[in-house]
Amino acid sequence: MSTLQKGAAYDNGFAPDNVYGHALELLQRHRVRAEGALHVDVGCGFGRIAEPLVAALGLTYVGCDLDAVGLNSLAGRGFETHRLELADEESIYQALRAIVAGRPVASITIIDTLEHLDDPAATMRALRRIAAEHCAFVLISVPNTTHRDLGFRLLFGQWDYTETGILDHTHRVLFSDTVLRQMLAHSGLHVVAANDVEMTISDQAFPADHPAFQAGTNLHALLGALRNQGDAFGRTNQLVRLCTPGPVEAVQPYVERVDEPRLFLSIVMRTQGKRSDTLAEVMTCLAGQSVADFEVLIVGHKLDVPHQIAVERIIEDLPVWLRDKTRLVRVDLGNRTRLLNVGFAAARGRYIVILDDDDTVFGHWVETFAALSTTAPGQILRTVSAVQTIRRVEYNYAVSLRAESGLETPYPSQFDWFEHLRVNYSPGMTLAFPRGLFHHLNLSFDESLTTTEDWDYLLQTAGLVGVASAPDITAIYRRWVGAESSATVHSVEEWEHNFTSVQAKIDNSALILWPVGTTRRLRIMLDNIGVPERRVAEFEARMEALRQVNNIYLSSTWRLTAPVRLIGRLLGRQPPNPAVAWSLSTQELHDLASALRSSTSWRLGAAMRRIARPR
Image (tube, rainbow, N blue to C red; front, side):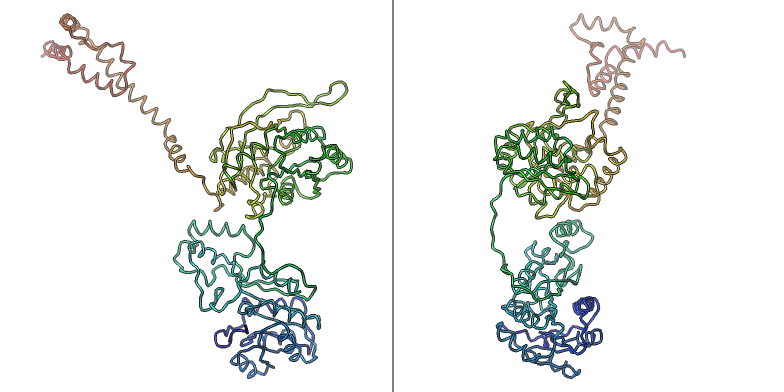
């Protein structure tokens, strides 16, 4: 397939912020200056880059295209032009050699042309051969079909080819950053620099009144935040890459769908090597797991030689099957949060769990996670941990551990997202995160946090995938006294700063999705907001009704009419019993007061008061 008749459809002017300006800036940045050397523009169209390029670089511009309209325009402006059909590799190569005719070539551009070809790789290979003969740069530009606007439209079933733009109806190949890189490598072209054209609102942002494209909508913010987690090209309109010729790589310009077999769980364990005894205990716990489908990544933080040797000895002493599943990864930079990012990046399991080197896990720990994963695939898996206070003590001239408390169970058996907004009720070893959060959504741990990093990660991800809970206690979280821990290493002010930072991030994040059942929980919370005030009001109303009843019972009128009630009892009538008033509800007290006021005793007393009243 030859190049589209670009002259008839495309005559875009040069601008510093469009693809021509970005291409020229790349060539200038890499000092493509060789007076008299050629710059060959393949698929040049009207060649609007010609004048700025010659002025900036002093090269001899040569335009090549199949379309006569664009070539005539260039020729009329004084530039050398050649008719070139982009068919198979060999014919393109031979045609370009004839055009160059032994002259030196400094650079080659093929701008917004490859996407119009049936076999763009053939053209790339031909350009690579010419560039290799002249040690020339090759600059390539293609539209990016992973711009977020296309994703927004596709999400709602909209995919429309347009006259021009990213989905130009003449495009034969749809490029992404990954597709372009693979095709370049397969053709022997290697990217040395990029200067992509960014465009927040592309030609695909239509209809403009669609809620997904309205910048003020929550939907737009959510979709944008999700797309940003994918890669850095959500706002890239055109991919502009500067390449050099090199070896042809075996990578194919396409991918085969292969679901790599994975073990179930990756256990990421941070250590400084200072607690070799508890680290050995944890590894003993792992050796006793009822399900062995896991790996262990011991991430050593700034290990000096003695502590590294201590960790390596513990690994060496493991049973062979567990030693083969254990890797030591050294990290010499960053804080404790950096270790998690390194560990999660190296993890090969379908789920990833954080296990500190002083925790204790029971034999069914992995088994419980595995059972949960079968009923709630893809969710965060949560079990429960007990808490025990421990202290280091000397016994028989040796240092050992002593429990300072029994096992406490302060953590709820079920995950409650709202409760976790206030405080973390899920220690790291009770949470197994699906690998897709880190490896596919690119949700990493916030390395600006020196504490609460696991709580922050949980809040950022729980709403996206949900949390499946098991009530089983599978681990013991050790609370240290008289020894160094994160609670003692970091100041109260540091903890409070991190806590505030996490809260602010939640408030500002469009990625926070509330779990199923949120509206019901909100109703309950809202109903309970005014409970104290309502209870006070109800109490006061009841006391007022009780006061009215007591005022009647204690009045002189009621005492003077006692004989009347005695006669009534003799006749079989039962007047209200004052002793039961305290057991009545507010409404029942109001009803009793009304009944007393309409009784014979009260009416007769009122008549007696009128007779006795002085005139």
